[in-house]
Image 1 (cartoon, rainbow, N blue to C red):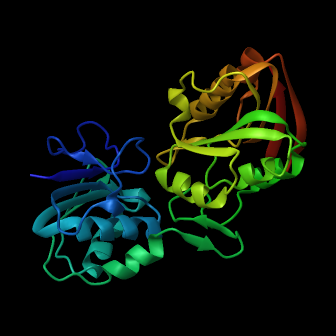
Image 2: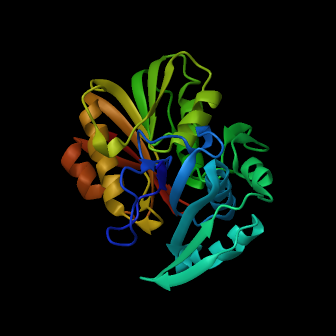
Length: 301
């Protein structure tokens, strides 16, 4: 039996098929659900995303790759899209058995022979050039259809950088585009945990100085050391829940990547307490701008 798993359910939440192949774009090294062949999977377990376009895209892709009659189990927290799963599946022509437990809604279906609306949902949730953004992006990527306000402030505040650098949590590459306007930048490593963002950044960063890596910044290795600069807009949500340790991990990784005297430019929401981590990892940290709910910090190692 070929089984797939999308997402990382909490332990004990549901039974995972033995040997299931992970297909979430947020798990580094996973398979790409969109690249799987039609009717090639016998069972699918999906932790449903909360956003509508992303959710419907994932459900449509899962139904596409399932063989007719194969079982699909989809679940999500009630307050993060779970209450809307049944209706979404029915719109694809599925007959749904629904139940609720552990603050989640669970929907079980057998893949019907005839599906409706799958191609449309895949098109609506797929990668594309976003008007106004003038860049490739995809629903589900952070701030997928607009420039994040924090990144916009950091882009406006950045000085002209030089040497070897990195963009941690690069997204689709909008901050990197600004960095690469400096001819003094010799290389820029762009890292992101989201495979979809990485694929879009590869479209958007048509510059031989840029290398894009699908990587979890928290799982840092020694392949990037002695850098002259790091730029970043650190995430502070994991699975929709605020996790301030994420930003702290980014700060520590940046410090370990930099040479002595190297500089890190970062933007953070004003309420996020990164000062202690910055003080521990850097020689100095200076707030260069504090407005609109965001602070721009220059930290020097």
